[in-house]
Image (tube, rainbow, N blue to C red; front, side, top):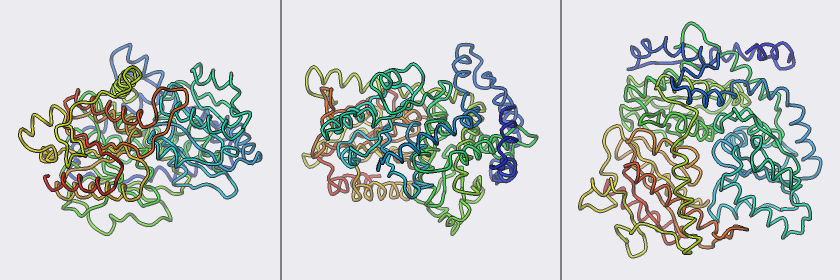
Length: 583
């Protein structure tokens, strides 16, 4: 970290040292029932942190081949210092976009390529005079249509580490077609790529004449890329001070250097609590944040779930769950309560959390300190992975769902039909209910709607919705989530597909087999073709839902797939209420 210390002396305008000192006291840990276990594991956490600082992959694996792969995933620790050297280029690029009259920026990406920019937009907003910014990470035809902006004045930011991800590439084909339809002769001048070196996207972007190409270091994994070009280029396009964000990242990195006491450390204490909690049965990491920070939970959810959820273990992040009274929670919770200076207090402050529950309190001294939180959580997750004995830098089960989707699409190209398992029940002749083999075996002769009766203490429910943007639908989904938590006292997750496939999907298949999954899809009212493909967005979305359900089935999960004839809020209410009534 010598370069970090050097930058602290070379950036007097951004007082990194003063920020570091504020961040050192930004975490407080009330251990509750975990006090003894935290003390016992504290030395191991500090050793893991020391290995992280030395870039020693032995912290996570003794296998030489795995260590080599891990060594090529630790570049995020150098990312703030590296990006400090690219601030001028990023700012010059963004100023040019603004100067050339672009009114809108649409980011096309999935998972780590999209969530950090979306959090920055939601928390920091878009500065006056800068283009409107939106992120699109859905294949739902209605969602794609809703992202339409005037193509003549829109810049499309195509962000993909591998360059081969099907969702952003399909979306890029759609928006290229819209540009051509609008008579834009140089459509490529409206595209910018963020990718790794030597990817198909990097080659294509240069060959086709994209406005710009940002090559991210290949040793930075997608979910650890918030403080790289992936997060900072979009931030600049929103008019934010990129140097300020980098400064907060550097400050947290400096504040997080290994010290004597892990339990009071601003980053290591969080990772220690996550791992010890998971081992003690408190694996439901429950985030309680003020409304302004709610989108940050989506980013934490992806980082923690995809990093730790494998080999049958993992931390289950619970983000966006409505806050309840103490009686609404089981004994499997570890709470993290964040406070943004100057923001409203979290709703939870008006009522107590369960007695003896461990609670981590985090303070954010300024909105731009979101960059420090990115670094804090990345360090904490890496430390937690070491203590749990897993590699937090791979995602073996994510590919499983991708492969299942690709197989279905290949069959569709031949037969023009998506193969789907026979429904166990057609409710009212129009709502199709299909159970996984594990759910069917455990339910016996009971109806599929009784899937929540399979819950046990320490389980969680994941509501997975392949549906487009609709206020009534969203209200119905959140009401169901609250109802499940209040009736059963189990933790609840919620994710839109296909977004969650690049986020919590790894945990669903690779983590502890304690989830009950309710997956919902619907036939679109109006489909949308994908230029150059033999399948539409609606077909792609359905294939992704079917592919993930097949993956859940293959990994022995308890799952129910509900398919609606249309995305009708009334039909959705009817079936979700039936599932709740039989819980």
